[in-house]
Image (tube, rainbow, N blue to C red; front, side):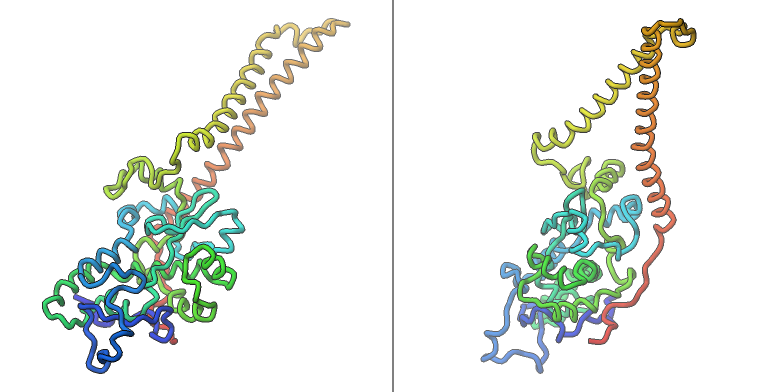
Length: 359
């Protein structure tokens, strides 16, 4: 049953897009029906998407394409292996810059808040989410008003298939991404939000999403930013049905030359290290034992052989120590993170319900 207590998360006065809708599936009450001389002020398509107009199924498909993340939803029970179960675990845009990450705007919602080494993927806010009437008409679980009686059932079934918690979670993530005026400037520079929004308008709008609890957002947004390299391994191990590739969550390389550049240096380092160790072992084994322990007076060749032997042993021991640190520290850190994630995998962040804040 639809939730008759549904409330749009923000008041109409805080909407950042003021377009008035007149969709075939949008019934206006007698008090809000547009008069003939006002019809020019109304649009018959979704704000920002002139090609999405009348069909209820078309509107639902567009909402799903813009916001749903079926792959991450399928992997939800495994995401504790990838990152912390904390929806607020999202670096602000200025912090992303401090960490040396390039902000990459993407339209694919499954890449939103996915980071890898020197870049982070962020989906721009669809303009329709900034419009109050869109929430009432297309995102409300309550059956929308319709001036075409034969389209009521089709729009209701289509809208109910798309749950508004996905949109709420998406906008909550932006409350952490843009938390300072500098973040707003970076977001506009990266084409994440419209250029005509100022800091006061943004603050009034996004404040209604900042304190939303996990119970009101989709499962994907129980987690914040996720590391791409770990998602790749989760896809390889669990082989989810919605994965486009059984080896990668997102292909990291688009050319052979890029692949070779990234992997040649580590392979060369490993090869050089092993060669050095093998050479040191060969030197150590080539020196007879009696030369090491029975010293002959005035035999400088024997002293030099003992020095070379000791240097070879020191090289092997140093290699073992460095290898232990290079492998041990990341493994210990990874083990601690997995342990923390497993202990907190059922934790739910309850802060408040959306739509409860005063304008």
